[in-house]
Amino acid sequence: MTPFLQTTREGAIVTLTMNQPETRNALTGNNAVQEFVDACDAIRLDTTIRCVIVTGAGPVFCSGGNVKDMQRFFNQDIKPDLIREEYRNGIQRLPKALYNLDVPVIAAINGPAIGAGLDLTCMCDIRIASDKATFAESFVKVGIVPGDGGAWLLPRAVGMSKASEMAFTGEALNAQEALACGLVSRVVAPDALMEEAMKLARKITANPGAVLRMTKRLLREGERSSLESLLELSAGYQAIAHKTDAHKEAVMSFVEKRPAKFED
Image 1 (spheres, rainbow, N blue to C red):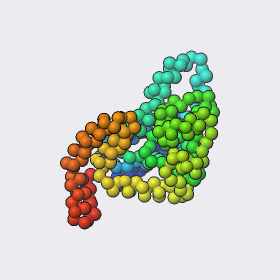
Image 2: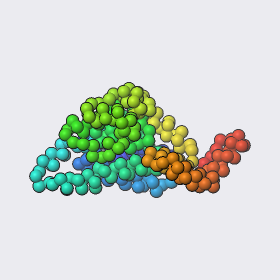
Image 3: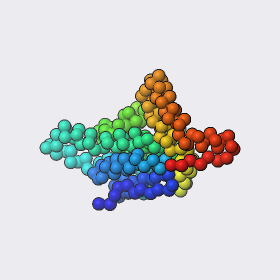
Image 4: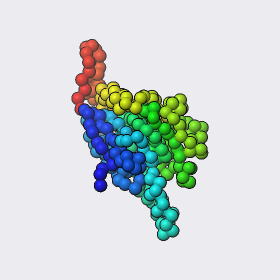
């Protein structure tokens, strides 16, 4: 079977391209979840990687779950408890792996991001969209609920009111509407999408890798921690940061008025 993910690397930047355009880069009925989990594990262990870009091949970013594959659930021999376990051991592994990856992740959204495809973008830290992109939390349109964590992810991206509107209607936003509600941070022409994503990734990777990872972890913890708890964690991380070679290099380059040069 052809791999779902195509992995390329430029310096400290890894690009993961969903490469199954014949299924509109669907996340189920294939090895997509396992490949994402494996990729995240490898990236986490490679401290020379400082940024990840996720994008899709073809005209669609990601269509989410494979709707045709869902017909097998009509089989009365497949009981609800088995379906629950399939979700827990399948698609639900994706947000645990990608959202918790401690490397900055940019979603370069080249086309429609539908259902779990939209939620996939919300697992990323930064979202840049082609003006051809659309976004739909469309589970209700096929008679199911967000099974991949979308009910947790989407409100954190756009707020509860907008998330509720999207989830209850299932209607799609165009790229400019997504920009207006904060779902994406910028919209560009289709042929400029990857260039824009790479430009941003290079700005990110100009900074020390260990500090980037700790900064992302603090941002993640800040979503669910009290201020007091986050301050304690920040103090601990800062103590580590002050003792890194990267911090020393950054300070000395500032004092000596020269560009900083960080080693992996």
